[in-house]
Length: 100
Figure 1 (cartoon, rainbow, N blue to C red):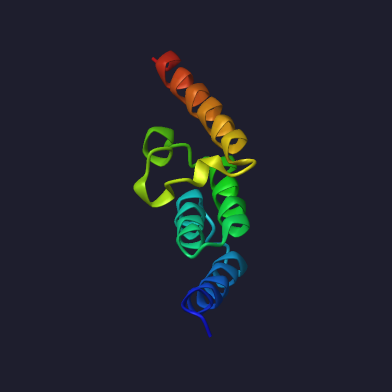
Figure 2: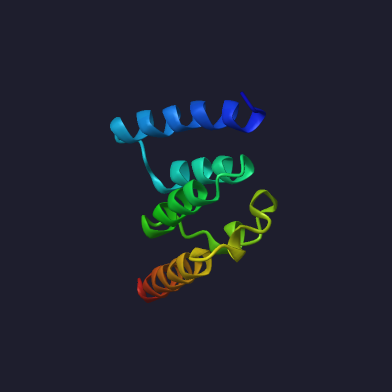
């Protein structure tokens, strides 16, 4: 079994267990996506990170330049997910500014 596969199979199991138990907050999805990316699993990484961003993990200044995701944002669909996160972040910041 290759080194990558040895890492992917346990990660798949962990991701499935987290999902079954409802432990899939944005940060958990993001970190799982990072792990998939590091293991060369582009489509799984994109799916997890996109879910994280859509779920509200919108720390865009942090995530778009994170060293562990070098090259990730060049994947088809990744920029669109990042743009959605940027918009959500801007909306949240605007709402906070309006709060007395």
